[in-house]
View 1 (cartoon, rainbow, N blue to C red):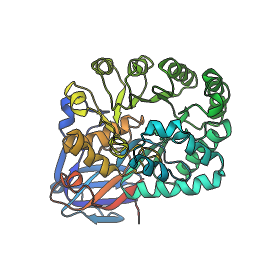
View 2: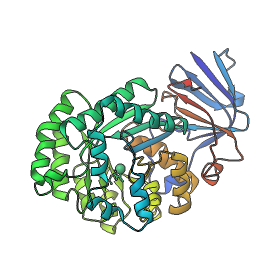
View 3: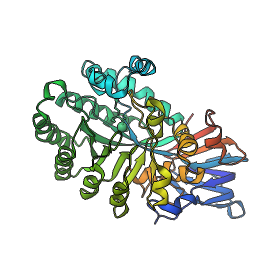
View 4: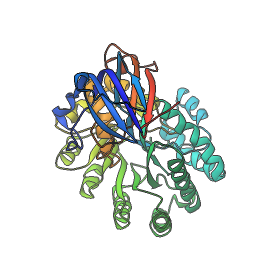
Length: 412
Ligand code: NIG
Ligand code: FE
């Protein structure tokens, strides 16, 4: 099966296979080709180039992309899209003056979502979550990481991870699953942290490994949640089961969690609304990707990740949606891109790099996703006719996507 896209106004993010992520000043460069073609064979990118070199073949399908931009699908490396119900009341409570912390202390927040999830059947969880997956596919996401973490019981966590596995089986989008049993302490373990961590390590993890339900492990390393030492126990247990960590850290406070994550070779550290010079130093000599979640900053009115300071210090940065019911009820990666440009002063080139190739790295899939590279997955966005790719973040409220290709297939 061959699909040929011709007359592409501009093809973004063309790279050779040796680029697994971009850092520092490299992020300002987005390699593109004007007046280009792209050939897809089955589910992979077979070749691309300028129109003069377009092969004269009879493809099964030809798409004329005159005036349009083609780019790799968004790689959203941090979401919690498997959940039940909503937290609209907390949203209104925040408008009326309560903080995220005050709401959580009243039993709202993560524990609110955990209650709703544990009361629901696996089928109900699947049905509600599937709608969000369909929505992000339409918005151009071609690879997504999905976390558990609203179970906080053995059964609840397993239910969530089974739903993620089923979504991965039934949809063409690439999905990576992350076990986030260490998202919050359930009420009965409030005074017995070790009891809950033992449950995670001795009961949840072996079952998850036996059913092959997770690729990564996560913990919420934060004042009032999991301490650095507790997070280290989780990371070490993950390593014993072959699960690298992706850690929620520095959302509200800096408690030296980032250095601990680097020490344990975490794949990513996520949130980073509060970042110290020591945190930047720790990341400088590491393979750990920092991940910013600007929709969360926007939605609960907390600081934005200091992207300029981090990129100017030579670090890489990935952007993700954090789609979840409490702090970011949106998986719209175009909004993430725009918010990164407008509020974090990232250039469009930096933001696109952060949401494609660096997002792929942040899910451990940059060999197969995140750029226009021969042999990579044909997961693509074809835009409506645009003046330039600046229009993606500029027209932040518009849907500029005309067609989606996933696994080499054009979606209706
Ligand atoms: O990434 N910070 C921790 N976890 C989620 C929010 C969880 C929730 O409020 O449901 C986050 O923001
Ligand atoms: Fe999150």
